[in-house]
Every structure is written in structure tokens, then in C-alpha cells.
Length: 252
Length: 348
Image 1: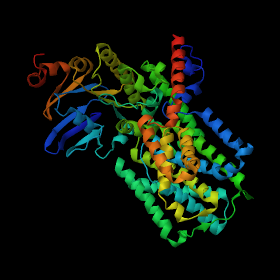
Image 2 (image 1 turned 90 degrees about the vertical axis):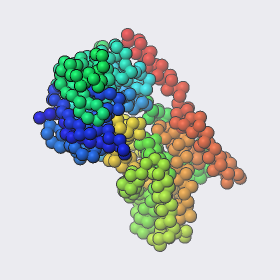
Image 3 (image 1 turned 180 degrees about the vertical axis):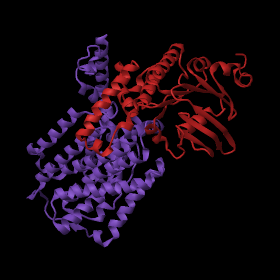
Image 4 (image 1 turned 180 degrees about the horizontal axis):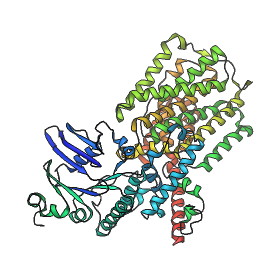
């Protein structure tokens, strides 16, 4: 039983079919990846998995249970979080606040929070403490009180990941996490993902264009082309797959 | 882990864990020192001899607008939803308390609590209807709400339309109060609202509202239910403006649809909030004062006050879109950022 899976997903935007009966499954505790050319339907599929996108037919399953009727904001409490391509941080807020919002699902009763009950205050203190710990994990403790809009790009990427981690997720889906990153930043992120996967057992799913990153990080890869499944397998298998080579990898 | 004892932790959160929570917000900035000073000033103002007559006339009015603008700020500044109909909430608060006081002779305190609750309920109801609309459509919808309320109070016999309802003398906890008493009650209420706003920006709910304002998709992926929390924003916003409404009725001990069906109050409240700065604690304080003082200073040309306010609104949106409070606070923010950087560098 896969941690997060989709079966036969079809998504149509007017006349364009972005996804045509795609199925994939994310194995628990592993790092999985999704590759495909631009326009292959990766982002659409990604949004389907995280319930930001409606689909015509098909099902999405979390540990075998259908989650088709879940809204995007329900996913965090299910244990599924996502990051955004080109980062989507709360620009005017501090790093600490950004991470704290990530921990929103642990907020408890909004009314108690609003009226500042002692239970809410205790909860807040523990949330702040935890947020600081997470920030330290990513080396962001010096930026805690800075507005994230002022941080360098690499740090913003780390804040995005830290925010995703704040909700104590079971599975983290990353949408082109190293887009626009230089080699050093890419390596940092690669190491972070590896460390989190191994030490905390978090399942990861990456959509990426950077081939070296995907091949290095992932245990299992899905390839899609023109909205349909193309191939799946370990990085080694994918690299040798003639279909994939023909459609995507070219010379490599 | 005790961060206060961790020698390697940066100064900003080693020294005092409260320091972190105080610095948490950059754009929903607190100027609690400034605000406390302002409140203290308000309390002491009547002591000055030249203030006496003026206080009775304008003082409480400024406070009423400030509270109403704070209510507007919760929705427009912190949740990011434009409402052009807060005059409707003002009316609901006013008439709730007016009817209770007129028919049952209740205490002003009861009127305030009832006004807050009833207006809050209307805010919740409004949210259910208008959250389905986006941006500009919601703005127009709320304007429609203001007209709707105005028409109701004008035509339904219960509210006595233009004839109005006159209210008995104000009583707080049984004690009758006059002008100065009312002024101080308003100051106390404003302080409570300010305290609430201050804690709101530091709370999880406030964070969720601002998250929805800044990046809705990111907020949702973090688990923020946009319907629930925007409804909370509406309810709180309405409630606070409702309190201002109650005060506005008891200020003159009279309610009439001639006043409350006038949609210019919605415009005034919106302008007060936007000109002052809707995402800052100090904003509505400046904005509310501005909106009341303009006609006061224009004296014989008071009819032109809306031209003046309109121009001011355009100028503010052009030059300092985050409001006058933000503009005034910029040098202080720069200094604070510099000090933080020094602290950080000093640690290395």
C-alpha cells in the first residue's frame, strides 16, 4: 500500500488534456521523483496529489483511503504538505512567523487562541520553541526576526522547507525545489532531503528538471510524457529505459 | 531545551524569549509604547483647561471613529478583504443598544456587550454570503449591505426611521455618566480594543489571517482553512465596529436613520483605516483622528471635507500605500533593523 497514490487521473482544461489516466504511487519512507518535459503535466499532477486541482476522473489515495473529497487545507492534517515552485512565502512576515504558520494544524481551538486562554498561551510557547528548533535545523536561527522578503534566495528556499516541516508531516511534496539554485544551494537541499528522509523517516516526492538532483536523491522515479505515464523504476532503470531516453533524456 | 541558557544562541532570543515574540511581526507592527503613550494622553487630555469644551464635543467622536477603523482594519488590513460597508455594522451596533436601552432601560455595559455580539453574528452571516465573491465583487457586495441596513432602519417601524429613538441617560454599572464620564468610558473601551488587536497580531489566528492575506495557496497548504478563518475575520471585524456603533448612539443619546442610513459613514471608516494604515496598530488611531479633525478644521468649509479626505486617500495610496502610520514609522523600523543587525554581527 502506497503512502500517497493516484489512480487513472484525467484532468482537462477546456480543450487541453493535461493528464490522461495517470497513475503513480509514492512509497512510504522513500524519496520518489517525477520527471517529464515542460508541459508533460507534472505540475497539474502535483496539484492533483495535493488536492489543489480538481480532476475529471480517477482517485487519489492516502494509505489506501480515498481522499478525493479533501480540500487543500485538509491535507496538512492528513500529514501531506507541499512546497511551491519559485517559493511562496509570506513576504512581509518574519522567518519565525512563516515557520509558525506552517505549524498551523497544531493551533487548537481558534476561539481559545483568540481570547488568549492559558491553554492557548502554553500551546503558543511550545510552538515557538519548536519553530526555533526547526529553524536551527536549517541554519536559519539568525534570520528568525528578519522579514523573509529580505533574505537571500537560498535562505528563502530553506524557510519554505522549514515551514513545510513545521506541521510534522508524514510526506513532503516538493515542486521544483532547486529551480534557480546554484550548485552549492542544490547540494545543500539534496543533503537536507537525504538527512530528513533518513533521520525522521519522512517520505519525499520531488518534481524536478535537474536530472542530477533527481537521480542522486530518489529511490524511485516516475516519468511522464504528454500527460501519460511513460516509465517508472529506480534511477538506474530509468536512465537505461529506451522510451525515456527517446522522449526526454536525449544523449544522456 | 532552555534557550535562555544556550550561550550559542543569538542575542535576540537568548536574552529573553519574549524578545522573539515581540519581534515576530514586522508588518503588523506594534508600537505599543507609542500606543500606550497615546492612550495616556487621551486620559489626561481633559485635564488641560483649553481642552474642556472641545473634549465634550469632539473627543469621544474621535474615539468612536478610531474603534470603528480598528474593526475595519481587522478585515481589510489583517485579512486582506476589502469591505465598503462597515457603516452597516455601525448601525447594527447602534440600534441593538438603542432598542435595549430605550425599551428595557439597560446599562450601557449591557448595550455594549449586546451590540458586540449581535453585530458579530451579522458579520458571521455576511461572511457566509460574501466570501463566495472575490475581490472587487465582495467590496461592492458589502457596499450593498450598507445600503440594505440603511433601508431597513429607514423603513421598518421598529427602528422609528427618521423620527428616531431617543435614549435615556447613560448608565455604567448603575452610575449615571455625562460627557466626561462617557469620554472616559470610550477611552477604556478603546484600550480594550487595542489590547485585543495587539494580542490578535501575535496569536495563531492573527497569523492565519495574515497568511491568507499574503499568500493564500501557501496558507492553505499549511492547513489554514480559508473559509473558517476569513469568517472569523469578518466576525471580529464586525464586532469591534459594532462596539463603535453602540458608542455612537449613546454619544448623543439618539439614533435616527438620517444618520445611520447614510453610507458616507462606511466611506469614512474605510478612509480612516486606509489613510492611517490598516495593517498597523497605530494606523486607525491616526486615521480616525484625521477623519474627524478634517471637518473640524475646515470650519465653515466643512461641506468640502469629503473632497479633502478623498484627495488625502488618493495621495496616501499613491505615496504611502501602507498608510501614514507606516510612513511615519519607517525611520524607526530602519533603526530597529540596524540595531538587530548590529546585535547579530556583534555575536559573531
